[in-house]
Length: 309
Image: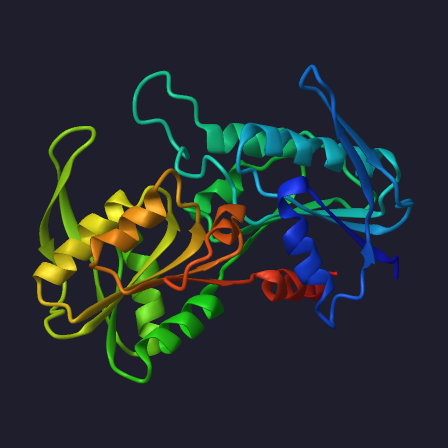
């Protein structure tokens, strides 16, 4: 079997280190040389020998610069003779732009998928692993024999929910009806009640909550959403559950983006008692606060790679 070697983009070195610390990931640590030039251009060099090795490359498309860095490194690995290439994208940017609503809108979830589909194939082909996509159908945007693999952080959600509930009965809730099927599936696994809110759009920027699908009075409510960006939708839903009589409200999310002052706004609201997220986005690691627990997806990634090797 070819030896595995793992690389990461600059923002995801922390996740590479966590993966290498696991006993079932005795992979070679890939070395890179990276420099920034005064004119804004960037220098990348793959230092490690990768010819005929199974290359694992980790990098989230958290912004356009990070996306191009990931693409450049993937291209370099292929040019240097990688036996296989698995690109792990813990957070896939623009995943909420998966379809056009108005004429002329660019479906950037698709353009990003097409970009990575343009990479030449290694001898064993290219895989792309994605975690808890906003819309599962994004995997169908990849082309040219790329094998997309959608990993679900379901075990993380289960463990976090049981820990937050502390052995008490709870209601698993979503922020809106759009995530209802996913939350209902998780609730069925727990044998607990699922809840979601009904919304009515007032304008392009404003919605009003009209109803809640379940009785949450005097119950622990644990809200799950795939991502938290500014926290606006989350707080609207949490307010609705509170007003319906919820005793305690907690939040679980896979991707803790916390753009702007999103985290502080959620904490200062006093409605939510705590948040649990994963380390799929580097922003979550910048927050040092007991209000937020961050759990790693390193084992999830290793299990998926080992199972498909």
